Image 1: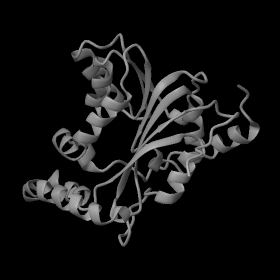
Image 2: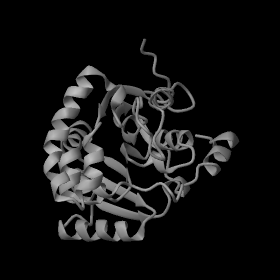
Image 3: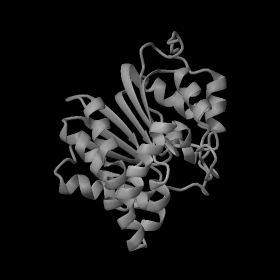
Image 4: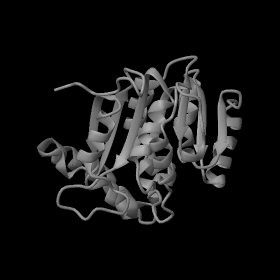
Length: 250
């Protein structure tokens, strides 16, 4: 598949913003599991398939990578943070999964994989870190096999709230994904819980409030998903990119 010059130029404009980082709670195993454990299980149930290849961009959640590998998937992990990648390698070694987990250091946007190399791609809180994200979506779609799956989780701008740096417009994000893939499910979540979690890593009282915050979020989101601060998108590549790659749902 020939890559257009315009696509190459777009990738060159897709830069990591050093000022945008993950929230502190996402590096805390207990908090991460409390907030996103159910979503992790859903991803594994939806996307894991024995003897297939998975790409995970970002090494901050070793348990997720190990769980995919334990489903007999061959997992490639790419991260620009040497410390996170080292911790990922150590976790893979401890789990006895070094033969099925490959760790690659560097910025994913600068790594070249073969078209159709992967059956599953996971972008968990990754695209927010880039100055533009559409070229990244096109790149990862190209590297998925026909019939391959993309799991994307992103911070979004919540209705009536001050958007943190890197939060994306939900409608623009959904439209960008639907131009390339067929969206099977979108899950809007976290209104107050993620804010409480930001304090919970250093505040014991805030940690105790998390279950209440998660319960409140469910009530708020039943009323309107517009308040959600995160979205998970589960999508599939039905056609080859460059031929037909559009979501034709009404």
